[in-house]
Length: 148
Ligand SMILES: [Zn+2]
Image 1: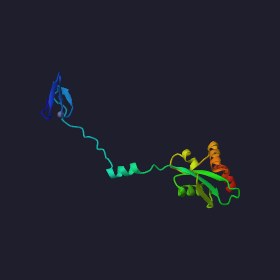
Image 2: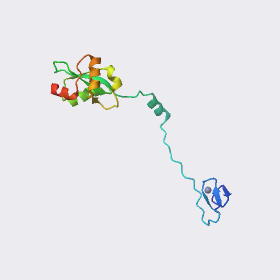
Image 3: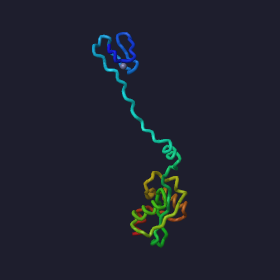
Image 4: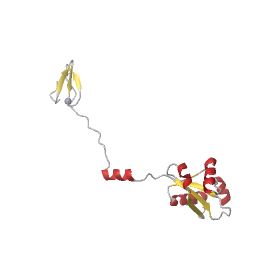
């Protein structure tokens, strides 16, 4: 047996090193080297950073009514976005007009998911929004036709 191992016990026909956990046959002329496997290094963020993450409110989309200033009928669309600026940017980019206004529609917040802005397309939810806002809330496809 190798004298390199630090804490060897004999267990029946094997030697076992309690330091490195290796075992080998008592007849083995070349036992394995005594090596303790390196522990994986776990990088933990500083406590300050962890606290900031835990205290930060979870940012998710909320509901916004979007309307076109050039639409005489006052038709609305429903956008989910994190904040007013995101909703406005998304509306302008998607509809292709600068003449857009945006207002909160809290009644539809519970239908929002994720963090990427998107238009509501589900007719059931559009009807729910229509009832909540007491205004016609249309799909993006219909709005594009009206606002083009
Ligand atoms: Zn050992």
